[in-house]
Image (cartoon, rainbow, N blue to C red; front, top):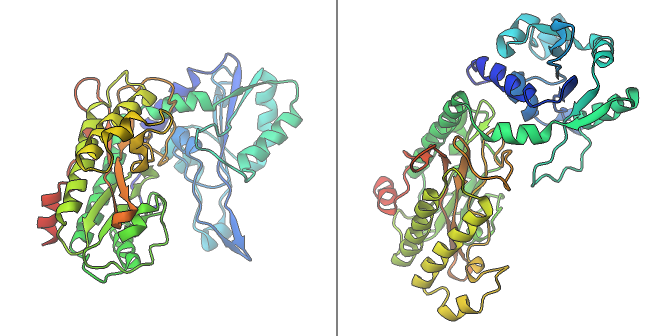
Length: 429
């Protein structure tokens, strides 16, 4: 890993919070992700399953975590299973975690090699009544690949059919959505790296530069600051490309007079940031571009003020829609008749602002969080309104990541990243 070691107290607290929500006499099991093949002997870069990372800090393939707080054998209340490292692995792949290193990372004292899994699990299963299995129930999840977790669950339930089954995910949805101060520091670090990348490209962008050249500048800055790279597939969309919400080709030349919409951000220690900015290729907005830009910025500022404890996500989006409607009226993009005759299921403003304003962010870009429950302190949300004008050849989106506080306006983790139109122009010139 490129990142600095994380304080193991984070994972100790996370496990304590999780186990306090478990049923009596139950055992929870968490698996690492697979390493996914491409073809021949090629594989995708490994990405750890966020749940086992959240609970242990172990960022290594073929790892398993078991939590059994009521186990009569005190040594089996927290158990890690790891691949046993050896000289051959050390030469070809680099040394894996030793038992001592695993303890230093996670705070877990009982560490076994994977070859002992079935024997140790048999003892633990004989004591417990319920297995907590880990399924993906995120509202955006659309998983067609059978995961390592899925395969293990099939085997477990076939091997021990008499046990009851409970779900880990509802517990994790609540816990992961409320960030620990250590997590907030890691997310701030990711945002600081993102700031360095954005300031770099403000000095780089000129007419006729290519979108992929800008992508390369960002990646350079991110990696040199201990990030693995982009937190998600970057969007660098010049001109009308900005009106494709998930434009990721990044292969067009940026022309004088156009805007470039960026949805780009760095990760750090697997924690994500999520930034959107829109800048003029030539270093100056036209009057029309600036008017639309300032409207989006106004909506963002007003939306941010509403991210308070007790706010309901769906109701929040209705209120943001009203603010956007007012701005679109001022820009003459819609008129009063459009509003009066709108379909409540698809209001008039949706013609120009068709996506949501905010989502949870953390270990995942679209992080865990139960959207039917009210917002609370230490939730971290994006705020990302946009106006998209294909007939005028540009689109604008602005986005920051903010932490909800007990009292007062949210704390902006991206407060130092330039956003005002005049500031963008000054820095580019």
